[in-house]
Length: 104
Image (cartoon, rainbow, N blue to C red; front, side, top):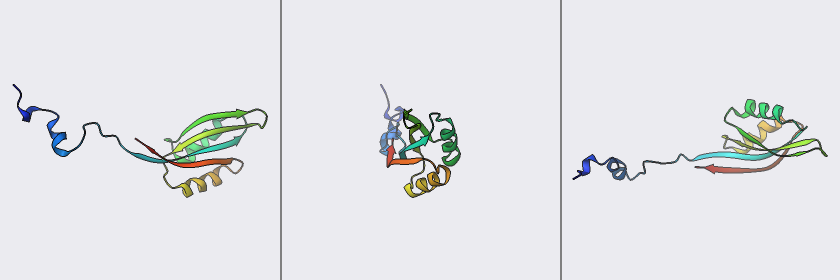
């Protein structure tokens, strides 16, 4: 026989919560086209500009146009702030689609 006070799920049920709540994270995602086929300098500059938590993935490289397209997610949630940082740190890059993303 079990007593309800010994149940580990009881405190969560009384608080109305789940024991496995997910944290919601808002961020800005964008496509960035940088000159050259090596993405290392761009990744280093992204980490410097936006912090180490920034994620960048190579989406495409074009030998014809000598450029690399990166998909980037940063923890910043202000699009204007992101565009300002990109303008200051990437004068030769082309900014593609910019969106707000909610991660769970």
